[in-house]
Length: 147
Image (cartoon, rainbow, N blue to C red; front, side):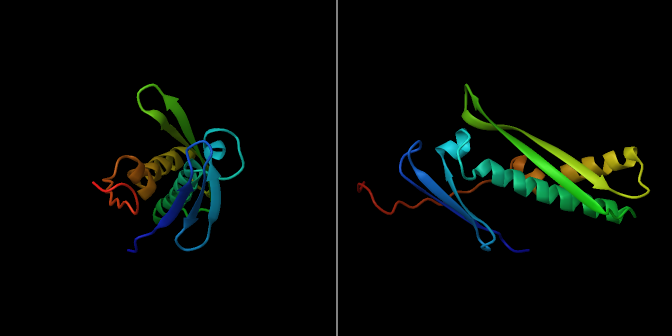
């Protein structure tokens, strides 16, 4: 399977600076700032991108689970709400992700649908990633004081 990438740049200090994020495939590019992340300013933010990724992944996973169980959905629509809150110990922290989904699945009872939705939540790759993958870092200083 391919490795996906996105890029981000930031210029300036935290509150006065500006940034830009882009998907590697060119499907999205957007500006972000302190105001768009921590207030109600124009632009996007990392949490919206996490929400989009989670909603998309979950919708695909649920659709697949339903179809494999013999209940091909007409549609699956999901909204992910990502909560970023200031915590005493860790500063800004993603504290909760709420998935809200509606699916049109002819002939399926609610109890079975709920079981499949829970399986999709647990099995979608973005859910798994947000549960704690290994994160590696390669950092290079391009200018600055020599050691």
